[in-house]
Length: 156
Image 1: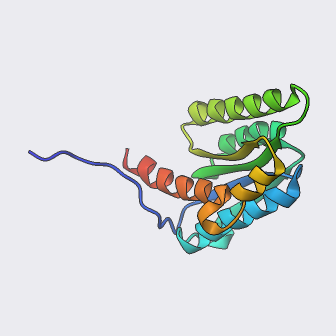
Image 2 (image 1 turned 90 degrees about the horizontal axis):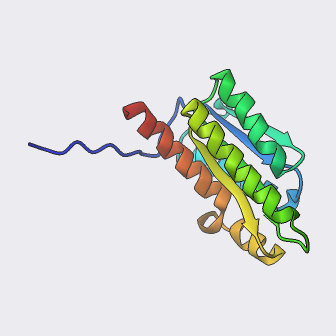
């Protein structure tokens, strides 16, 4: 008797991906987007025609657009990208928590992988570190997760 193991792999040539990216803190988010696109094309071998980028004002708007995209049934996975930097007020906690909660709700509602690449950091320096090289780019990591999850979902 052998145990059946289901796990994902990276190539996903015919996968359809949406990337929802916040414009707020765009100097960070554009680096996250570059990392995500690089991984989808290079490791996932995803055709450019199968990638849609949707820009929204801020992180709090990301979940509602993810919900709309998931409902369309046009995508195999969604990648959410943004950056929330702690300030002097409680606003950080509200935005960070509600964004994460919203993404989880959409994932469960539609059984659709949503890779959370929304940074929640204390400082600008931390954000820059997490949007850095391909090995340290959280947008790239989110895209990698999305690729694997699409392939796992196909097997379940």
